[in-house]
Image 1 (spheres, protein in one colour):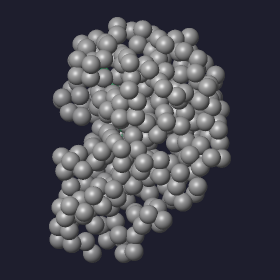
Image 2 (cartoon, protein in one colour):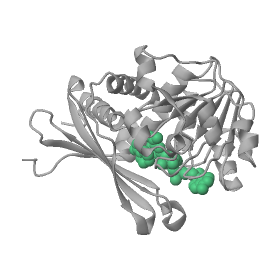
Image 3 (cartoon, helix red, strand yellow):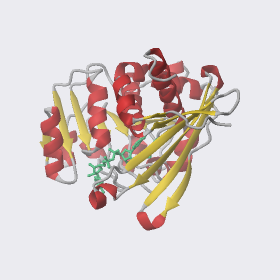
Amino acid sequence: MAEDSIPYLSGAKIKEVLDYNELISVMKKAFAKYSSGKVVQPVRTVVKVEKADGFLGLMPALCEDEDVLATKLVTLYRHNQEKYGLPTHNAIVVVFSVNTGIPKVIMDGEVITTMRTAAASAVASKYLCAPNPRKLAILGSGVQARSHFEALSSLYKFEQVTVWSRTFNNAEHLAGEINATPCNTAEEAVKDADIIVTVTLSSKPVVQKAWVKPGCHINAVGACRPDWHEIDPELMRSAIVYVDSRAGAEKESGDIILSKAEVYAELGEVILGTKNSNKDKTTVFKSLGMAIEDVLSAKLVCDLLLKTEKLK
Ligand SMILES: NC(=O)C1=CN([C@@H]2O[C@H](COP(=O)(O)OP(=O)(O)OC[C@H]3O[C@@H](n4cnc5c(N)ncnc54)[C@H](O)[C@@H]3O)[C@@H](O)[C@H]2O)C=CC1
Ligand SMILES: O=C(O)C1=NCCCC1
């Protein structure tokens, strides 16, 4: 049985201990463990809430090597921001003892989702983009736009960063925060970019093949449903496509399903050295998000807090 009260870790506490440096190495480990078959992780179960254009996603994973069993519960309500001024993504993570199955800790999952997704894109960029990227283009201006700027800036010193968003004011606002250039169109933003990040809630493509410099690396982070896509199908078919999980991509990724693009490899296979990185070609990392990213992030949080004795 669980204790009368299970410790709860707030997002603020988690933010205090997580940094991109460490998370980037943990995400590298997550991808490698997943692609070497050392993770038990079903494809996300999605419970749709049609009337609110939302869903609840169940994301459990077990990694015995790392002695960790946990699940993230995450909701995506697309209109929360405009309707209520609330975050569109909300989540908690529950960590269990692998030996007894007793729940050990419940923690906020929003900060973990925000940071681990950007750290995952940073790992993908490290393996898939050509050396010394100079220009970063961010399409979208929400939570992931900010975290991606932070994570990628921890790896690279960009000479130029551009931001496009559906509403120019939002692009301007974010650009002001991060010292970037706001753009009126996505085409203008991605022109000559070495790395593009797509972090919108759009279900229609926001970037076209003709706009993209050959050899560019794209972190395609949005569009997590089979009928949503963010990337021009022609661009998907002409690029070398990497995914976090083949099983997830086949079931959930509209960018892959609708374009019928071939998946070349899982990112973990590149990390393990069984697939090439093709840094000189146009590459897409189609990120859907994997439970093991959350589970290893949660373990990192627990380890860091145990070190500082904030978690007994
Ligand atoms: N791959 C992964 O592991 C994860 C992916 N995501 C996805 O990343 C994307 C961004 O997430 P957040 O920044 O947290 O969301 P957010 O709600 O903070 O920001 C969403 C952005 O998309 C824009 N947007 C909304 N509808 C649009 C449309 N029709 N066309 C163009 N832009 C539109 C909004 O104006 C805003 O700039 C979402 O698609 C989300 O589901 C989020 C978490 C994890
Ligand atoms: O991996 C995640 O967490 C999510 N991915 C897609 C959108 C919902 C949250």
